[in-house]
Amino acid sequence: MPVLVQGIGNRSSANSVQQVLKESTSKHSTSTSTLPTGTEVKSITFAPLREPHRQTIVLLHGRGDTADQFSAFLLLTSIPQYQSLQTAFPHARFVFLSAPSRPVAQLLNLESKHQWYDIWSLKEPEEKEELMKEGLRESVNWVHDVLSNESEKVGGLQNVVLAGLSQGCATSLAAMLLLEGERGPAACVGMCGWLPYQMRVQRALDSTKEALQNSDITTSTQDSSDDYTQEDRLRAIQTIRDRLDLPPSSAYAYTLAYQHTPFLLCHGLKDHKVLPELGTSATETLRKLGANVGWKDYPDLGHWYSSDMLKDVVEFMGSCLRVELGGGKGHGAEMERKMSPSEVAAEESGDIL
Image (tube, rainbow, N blue to C red; front, side, top):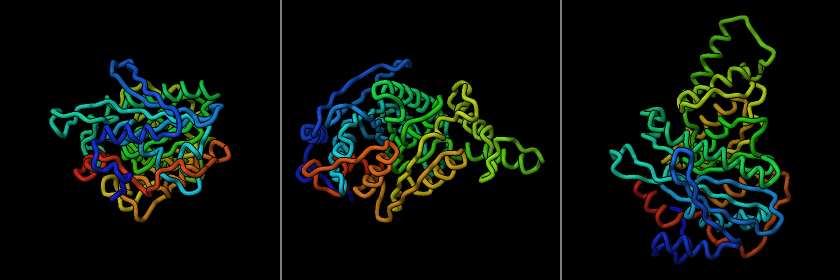
């Protein structure tokens, strides 16, 4: 089991979060806004440790969690060589988005939980996939708006990173594939997650490849490494747009924004909540879509992050942002891995996704 901050485990979740937030090494603020759909959403922002503001890192929590809890414990996790995420990126602004509370279909919609979208089962990802549509569409559009706003504040998407844990990872990957424009963020990081509609996208790619193999037609955009054209990939991504009732992409095949963003997917091999196979399948499909994806697994890790994972994440983001990483003593809580009390309870009850 993950290790809790000493002295916090026997307190209420709200008090624990407030205590950790008070120990934060930078100023933070909470804001609420209303999406075009009428849904009220919340985010918590941590100012850079040092001015000027040069980078922004946008983070999405897992299902059943909140921005308050996720940020409080993630930012105080000790990272070898770098102390913490904030000391590693002292000029970065950290923006944690909080998923709204949505009804849970498995509980007959009688109960709600914070989730980016509703989901029926991870064992059969496409089972009752219609449950995903409304929430995922809303969440993807919100992420796109946040990326656009942060890009304006920090001088372009090349200075922005998108990252997510578990269902936050899944939402981030969907947002990346559906992003319009000439380029994407500097990096995208996914921890313990999966790719929504992965099987549907894979089938679309396979059908295209099968049709190509049965013909003598080739095009100038043919990719000899995997036999998929950019047009093939655009059509495969359109299957996601169709499921979410989104309009067709306005992009040409040569301007797929996510192809300009390096990805890193990380997963614990002892993850029994979101199986590692879902992470490797996401990696394979993203690569077939022309994405530059790195994969890291951790033999002794379950459904959570670790200090070693965060060290890999820090170095990956630093390379993509092209910045010199910081670090210093006394800024990280002395623990290897941790969850908030409510997250521990959720993990034990099978609630965390």
